[in-house]
Image (cartoon, rainbow, N blue to C red; front, side, top):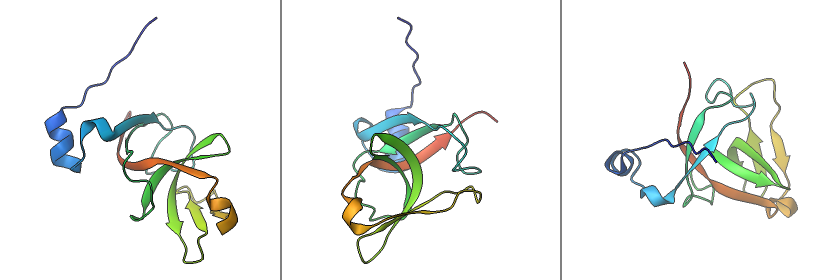
Length: 115
């Protein structure tokens, strides 16, 4: 089978993100919900050690078997607000009782794609 590779220098990863390369995952963005920040087909580097929403940022999530890329805001009551950068998408509210069903893959630290 054919394999495709993309390489990132380990010293660049450590210097740019203060993350060990082994702690990163590569994801491909699908859809337009995060435009203009992230385009359909963009490559995303994901810090798999950041799974707690302590930083307001863009996260890769899995909810009921579906992968999503969203900004996540944790509310004091334990609920989550999933926010798309594309204004045509309304924020999703995840009530506290359902927040346990959200698996955090990690926080997006870099994205890039075609110009």
